[in-house]
Image 1 (cartoon, each protein chain N blue to C red):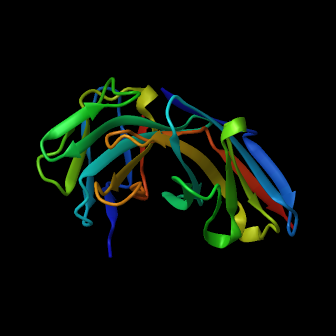
Image 2: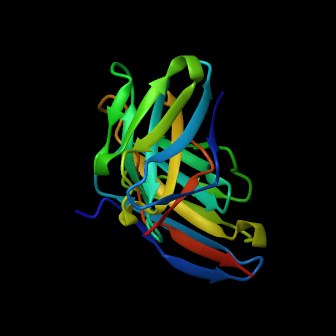
Length: 114
Length: 114
């Protein structure tokens, strides 16, 4: 079984501040990990993913995430927030089995103030 | 390039009515999924399909049926709608090929059951 916990349903930052969105996962086998972003009234778009290899992964729009196996975490960061980053962010996990489905966290809404 | 298209985008039903949501993808993807999104709950998997003519239950399948008669289409049916099925429904697809298989999402179908 696999699961994802996102700490904080809402995170507020000022423009230019560091963005940190937290994600912890549970998986009985090595996981594949994802961050998706959802802008208002739209579907989800992939920000970045971790499969194997380098534990620090870079995504679109300046976001990056680090896979820490010992902490079972995959936190999302961005050095400097932009107003356009305001959206809902979802962490997701699946195993490396071919038929494995994606399990999502409950989401974190990022609010960016001027 | 259409990607994943969902119809209709909005629908209002009365309790007990039936309806079908259509998902169409033009990327020749093998896997297709139906999720529902509710506030504070993230995305929950309803049903999925790993190929034409095959379907499987996800996390919250009760009250829904699906069919995949053609590879490019995945239909989600509600036989007797209930207010608890008020939600935003997302279809997604992914390819069997490649390393991890990113999910591609439609823009969602907002359903209200009165």
